[in-house]
Length: 383
Image (cartoon, rainbow, N blue to C red; front, top):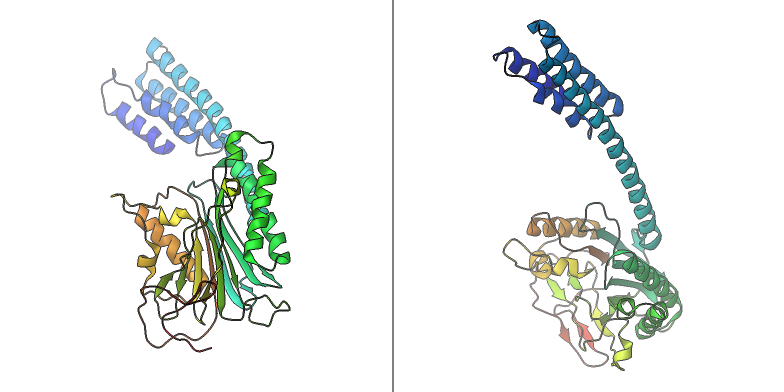
């Protein structure tokens, strides 16, 4: 572009009467080079522009005229300004690169990428920031193998910025410790509640009134657990604390919402009173995938204000694995919003390997049986 501007200025000056000048083209050349090129290239553009001005006035025979001197001084002044702009832009680029590297380090420390296989299950996770330069915010996920089965959490901390990141670190740290020690998801949730209460103690009112929506889940490992309380293989236990319900994608392409029987308050709101909590139990057949997500998915809107419905959009689709599922979901949400998501998204998918069903059976929901909120898939599956 700087070269085209200089050539355009020469062409304009030579093809018009003497009272017309191409100095705006010559002045623009170093300014255009400043934010995109190095200091040396910007200086070269300024020198070339100034040289073009001198050459034109030598050609026209008016080197000593006041107009020619004024034009040359103008171009050189703009070139010096372009050099200053180049230094400011380069310094900003270095600071942004440093901030990005720090944000990536924070994400790896707080939300590390889980192993592809944990406890015999295929696992995939994503964190999609609404802002292009952001790497982490108030959404969270974690999954780990414990003596009580494979346990996982997906949550969303109220608020934004560093305060939300600090709360995410508290929740993740408390979950990793409690998931290993506590035999029941209700007790795990209680540990998270106490951790958030400790964090809010002595903070300002906004931090004290914070809360975290979360879904805690537990699936039976492929190998027998050493703990009697662990769920048997093919069983899914879910405790929902005010979070969007996960989805269970069956091997035949049908999608079911894993809805709680009894609604519970988000984490951090225990001071409002004692509320009953219930762990709902579901079948987790071979070839099925459990998909957990934050409200960045369900609150994504298109240009007409229509919310994204993951159950409807994923129904009838088959995916070779959890990675492919999350890739397709992220792409579909971006297509729905026109590439402008309004909120961050944390996604976690856990698949139980197994053979796919030869036929597709449509499912409208999960049917619940008696005892401990147990629910079974509407169609039978082999072991």
